[in-house]
Image (cartoon, rainbow, N blue to C red; front, top):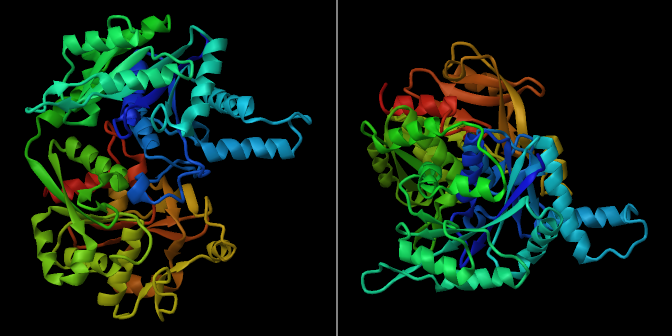
Length: 541
């Protein structure tokens, strides 16, 4: 069959759920027996997402091959239960850079290189390369931003070019917000969506399907109005109301026969698979046997008066996956590391949590507060899970308060410490001196060998694993012996460079720190082994 292309664009405003909509489309098509892959296009001039502030842009997700990308790639991997590659992600910056490099290499054979058509053609070329690499029959491409913005015009031009060439193989889905107004806040207004469609029409495109995002399901009257005013046929407006869990979205879409509508428009027939595994997951989510409260000690979730959880979205989802596995409802408690520095007495609130996570991060803000929280968990037998920076700071805390190295620190924060238990590797130091920050950390999947008899080995039930990394600083091997003698268990080692990957404590319900980011490999149907063991300890099993 010819390749089928489904483009997902956004209307009215950002943050309406294009990413989970695209991921849900992938899940639905996969459930019908089609080999499906997903691509995210970000309209930023950044070459990748690695240099973006997580408070502004959300989590930086890392793929096996080391690509730093948008958090939506995490949703794609979780819904598709697969590992994607750098071929599945592009930005305005990376596309322009590729075209410029080709021009410098004379690949255009002396032609005048213009924004149109070269940039849209490069976009199409990258989409087709991803299709080949993933051996996909259908590709779902999410275009960041909203229609009407000049940043994504060239990507919309790419849709138009593809549609002219493959008229029956290209579908455009518009995810558009339907606000509710009136005294009761229950009158759904379609006018903003009408304007979004006109913006799309202005560049020569017409949406084939509209996903109507609203707080509540869209009624028949509103669907009819959108269909009539936007030139769509009956059945082309799919209700996309708020749901309790994002994993409910594919099942919710099927209430409006969304997949059948897609297959009909692309002249495809289902191959007989179903959503039974997903339905069983949603049933678990909706019918928990109690709850488990997990505290996340961080600093990337504050923006004015709002809590922006996207900075730690993969951590949150991994906690959820493991909680669902144990039939528990996860309750996330946001704990501000800065507050513990200012008032250590607030550490008492940690007793309200069944487990505590210190996730990854960079910089010195809130560091001493995190170290205090780690110490409290260690001394009070509260299950603790440190991710990347959380592992490094657990090492610092142990060195200071158990091994007696009072000034122990990471050289990221204190380059002059006499006991640099966490230090930068020489190759990373050279990169930083040359101001080579983008895409230069220890990134992507690296092997790790586990030590038998440890919590890590028990979780994975095998000796050799592979996990994704994103950091510059490492456990300083000069301190391995002294910390081990004091009781710090080194339970995972990178065999290639003899680097410490996992530390843990004996005699504690769960005290584990990992140099990597296990949250990037957790799946709703297959929770990450370490998160499973962490939640198991938190609920007292």
